[in-house]
Length: 126
Length: 126
Length: 126
Length: 126
Image: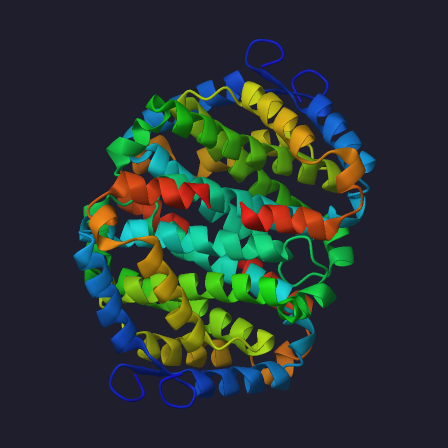
């Protein structure tokens, strides 16, 4: 990362804005379309994992070809997410901080501890 | 962002690692499961946009309630993506730099300019 | 369809069961994996529509190549859904009848009429 | 199913057409929006499975509450898929027959037998 462990969101967004502008693609980058593109890229990421056991999924990056493909798909997901945030003017760092606080309140350590089912039920009810 | 326009990926990953460890949730956080969780969160994000026209989608954050909901879903997507990168030991900043270079090679300005259909066809063939 | 407008679900499921058995793929067809495969196919379907305006999306089948590609993706989605129903022993016709009744109760004509926003809000709250 | 193992696609589509017309929702049911709605419903289905092991996923319908929720989500996916097919005038039974033939050609028994990796690689390259 730019500095150790930092992601330069502003620089990536600036670069993407230019990439899109040069190709006259602003017309396609509505939030609705970008959400679809994000969803399509996540679908491609899912395809790399769908037939793997959980254990195999943990070793997927041991094969160089799969490692590159998975990193590429993750980059696609991130780039579209940052582009969406840019177009909607959403501050992702602030959004993460807010959401993490909500998650701490929603899943107190004492009740959430090791409870897949509880976790699963809560999610399912959303 | 932490510094202006920077996202402190390492700090979020450290925090999430602790959040997960405290709840004894490491057992659930296989890459396979995290990819599914990421996909589920993107599905929730899609639901906010599905009935909107492209123009309405560009104004979605004008309603405070929708703005919060969309920012929350985007944060969920980002947190699961960073968590997946942590578990798989993928350097997202490097992955983005690599992918952006590939995209520049794949979509030269002169041929890609304003061509939705070309863009669409290429994507569809992936 | 087999008879006019009928889909022979039992025949497709029987055929798929045989297809999977011949290739020794039962080991991969857990419900979890099938849900991921379904999700990946929907991602491919989304990619065909992501850059189109709503109007263009309504004319997508006018191009023979796009028409074939979209029909192929829809078939993939349906086959995985029927396969999942088979493995989980879910009666889809009964499930649809039940869900349609719930939808009639959830969206009474008089209050739901032409209200995108109401529709959207309900969905978003699920 | 209507007859044993048959799904009355034409009847469901007719019923949905009426459901949508009564609520003045045709304006929202563009193919683009329906694909997004389909994708959102699949996201909800994924959420029911994301934290389960493959073995647990095979027993998900043993709990009545989970069984109902999963059947409901599968019905939602199917209804949106049938609605999309109706709006695009796609004959799903024909599409499935065509796609199944392509799959037989793409995955010959002798080479595909028990090969997850081969299977996975082919999918990933799409």
